Length: 169
Length: 191
Image (cartoon, rainbow over all chains, first blue to last red):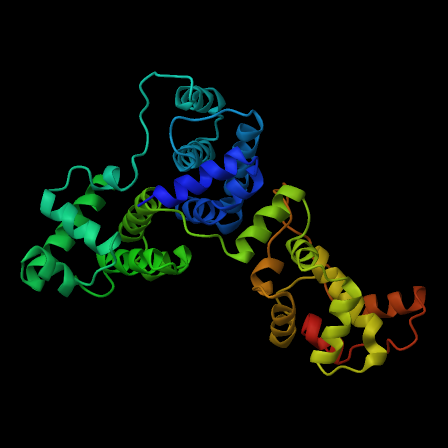
């Protein structure tokens, strides 16, 4: 799911195209900040801080053992947290980034893309969400693929989203 | 799954996103009932965005962030990205809006104020936004209303008043500025 983007990020990083690398994430940075910080101007303030932090991180020349997108999302989470708690978490963020660097082998909690999102769901629920959002299938196609009735697939899908929502709350 | 439920809204958002569209998060949130439902939708979408491959940013988003990083007004950044001089934009505005070429300097003053964020964009006529959007190939209206950088205070717009126009006419001898006219109406909503 992420392979092509991760490969392009690696290429940009190796080519020293740091501005282009970060620019590719402007959309998701702004979207996530707007979801968390509902005031549009304040959301942009936070998004701006995320971009500045990423640029300064790249300027240090550090390499990571995780894909760059994982770093992006971690910085978003810390900057949103700073916004709501009116505190700086530079040390905590620095510590996570240090552990995420290529020359560290310390345990690292982090994002694992879609797998992390689906964690805790049954195999069938995971399959339905993957087919829906990864392969972009409609419910009829998903039902055929899984050998189920479309109604059953609708119910599994709804139940899976309810679980995700409950977990998020 | 009812049409306006959090699950249905999330599904609509996620499918559009994965198809390469740019569903607007604020619009989706606005469709969910305020309170726990809206917060639930925000959390679901946020978790999805953190997991899904990032979409390409829109031109407006690139301009917005570049403007913040460069501490420049978004409209100015957009115009420079398009490699257009201010005079070229003003000439195009006069032509597209069907204005009297003799009013060009007045249009230029208004456009300059709009571009650097000292003219309140709210009353600016839709035809001006349409002309600028065509010319600059972006949603100019959304960009113009945003401030340059995180300042401590709210933006202070210059308010239109006839006294200002008269005073300005007195101090700067622009001969054809004869008070409120079509150009004023287009840029300030007052004529």
